[in-house]
Length: 197
Image 1: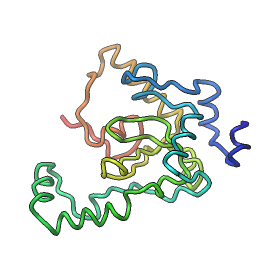
Image 2 (image 1 turned 45 degrees about the horizontal axis):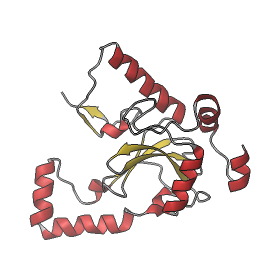
Image 3 (image 1 turned 180 degrees about the horizontal axis):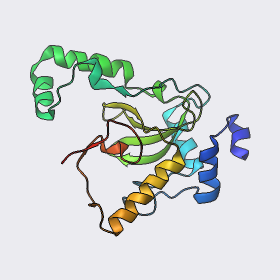
């Protein structure tokens, strides 16, 4: 692809196939209209967003496993308890702030391109350079301060899983809304995603 020569990068084969055979840009203001969430970005938008965020595309993405911020400060499982401790326990609050100071910045996004917005400041990114090249990751660390999570799938599988879900909703074999832990991981294969009964 021309863009690979211009940027001196190699895009994952599955991503190139998606861009050339399925669609290069399906962004929408309507949730799940034509593609997952608010649509897969065009390659041009992905690159433009990376430039705006000053994300280095030519440096390896360093994560190989999920980076859940709560693991570093013994996060409360119950959100209300977490909020109470954050507001009333200075040590707990300081521990959280230390984690955010260390990990809540764009250096962890190096070697990736944004491909889709989940919503509320979370994004999906595709790894372009590094050991996990081709994988989709949920970036929930910059705004929402929870972490970075591998979906353990490529973009074609991510899209296919979304299609399967839309068909199941249309056929009324699954509910439209699901209550789940880490709902952003729904179209992947990450064990953190769990449906709540």
